[in-house]
Length: 359
Ligand SMILES: Nc1ncnc2c1ncn2[C@@H]1O[C@H](COP(=O)(O)OP(=O)(O)O)[C@@H](O)[C@H]1O
Ligand SMILES: [Mg+2]
Image (cartoon, rainbow, N blue to C red):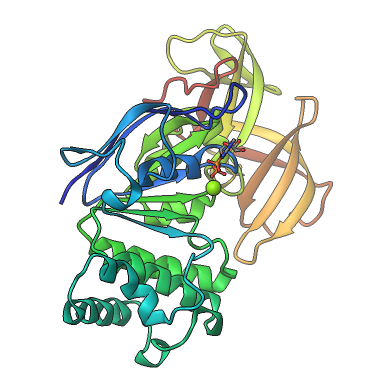
């Protein structure tokens, strides 16, 4: 099987909308790449360029050593799964899965074999085969759409927000199925979502997109532990990373009365400090980086609590903390001392938003 390669891909509709700006990336045949980003950042357009449903303004797309940039969609040997399922309403489940194979004149026995195999994997029972899509639940419809993509045995799989129309519980189940399913395929997968949990759980690699640009291309864990810039830091992680713009003096950032040494070599006037809510704790005796805060909101998450505090001496800067609430802390209005570890801190240039230090 072959890798998928995008080189300097651009798409412009008019001067004001540039949905895809110079995207270059490679997806190997054992990789599951997710394009993650907010609505309107160019995810679907990128996928449609790969599928051949749009012409790039500039750049190239290759599958293995085939340059497919100017091939018609049908000539690329790509399967695409859409949020809306895109099943033929007048055809049965079986016919939906078989249609592309019939067009390719694959013989009936082989078609049947592939459909039986895919259906077994996707938990689509024999009795569903004669139904029309209208007689299926949302989850079943999406499984049929996945089945239709699988039986074609394409060189590349593309999936555009395939779970978005499913309710929360079903979404988790189909997500797990998708993970198992594609772990067994030897073809590059490009998956589009705005949902960071899907991106984190499914992918071997994630490209975070913002305004048509790749902000960071990395394994999911790396996005979390070493976000390349403030956008990625704020977009990946829930609740969001705390991002505080702090004044600096002589290589020390000031969080109220607490001075925090900056990473090597930088000496800016202001810097953005990033702290994940789970990296803040209630201070213990031995903690060095501690600061006082006043709670203004307590939310119960079941296992833990989400606290919102104002950090003292910062002009009411807010910080969110995810922690187990000590027995003595009960109410909004309580004052507490919090602590962070130096190695859990993230720093970003306050002008460019780029990560500073912490390589
Ligand atoms: N056919 C089109 N003509 C003009 N603008 C478009 C067209 N398709 C998409 N866009 C614009 O391109 C941008 C990216 O869209 P899209 O790729 O659908 O984003 P996403 O899938 O990330 O939500 C949006 O601003 C959208 O309005
Ligand atoms: Mg989209």
